Amino acid sequence: MISTRCAACKYLRKRCDTDCIFSPYFPSNDPLKFACVHKIFGASNVGKMLKQLPVHHRAEAANSLCFEAQSRIQDPVYGCTGIISLLQQQIYNAQKQLAIARAEIALNAHQAHLQGGSQFQQIEASSSFNNVAAEPLHVDQSFFDPPWLF
Amino acid sequence: MVGNSPCASCKLLRRRCARDCIFAPYFPSDDPHKFAIVHKVFGASNVSKMLQELPIQHRPDAVSSLVYEANARVRDPVYGCVGAISYLQNQVSHLQTQLAVVQAEILCIQMQHEPDLPTHHIDPADEKTLLLHSNLNNLPQYLNFASSSNVIQDPLKRESLWT
Image (cartoon, rainbow over all chains, first blue to last red; front, side, top):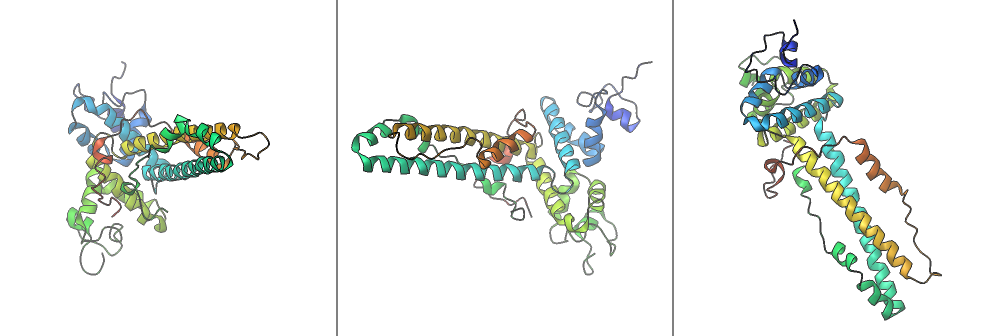
């Protein structure tokens, strides 16, 4: 007899009903997926969270829970927040590089202006520079800023 | 137990707060919400196991990150803090594109100068650029998770998620 239990019911050693909350999102061919979320969140909590969501959101929720659980297993101290901190740092570094590069453009433009008016006019005609310089990137980093990580 | 009062965890769980209670140092009784939200998302038993598996010096940070993730999950029940990760990755990509454009602009400007003038060599193998690229390449792709507005927008709502 071929077992048709989902990965969750196999793991929990229970009968997999037709209305099992886990079965659409934890297929039997991927036992690790449920094992991860069960280890971190617990089957009961995962079931509750999924039941509270509209059906069309449950797949994404199960996947994001799995991702969070895997991150927590890989990094038991920081989990996903370690990734957030890393990305924040990357944004900070990129913004710094961007500021340096824009300052270099401004310096080049100034030097060209000092050397001769015609050269500066050429630089001013470069439309991409103006568009790039005028486009600020607003990142509300304070929302994510864990004061104890930096 | 800190002093004579049970910690927030034992109050919520309605049990005696032992002297060696694993939760007591991190869930004081004056902040019941902190444990409540962690318990709601992860469960007290799972949190206890996670803390027991960590060296003591790492436990405060672990608790803070669990509180953060729990808050994010309550705010955004579909994506939790994974939505924030997607959002930040998009920001990094956007910045990377802007940087590439600006660096190309620098090269154009330098080429417009007279050939005998010294030019700054922008080394594509610049260490910082490599770091940005390599770190992006090492991170798994989260971009298939949509950014949830519940977690990231409303910048005026500067509620700290780290307490």
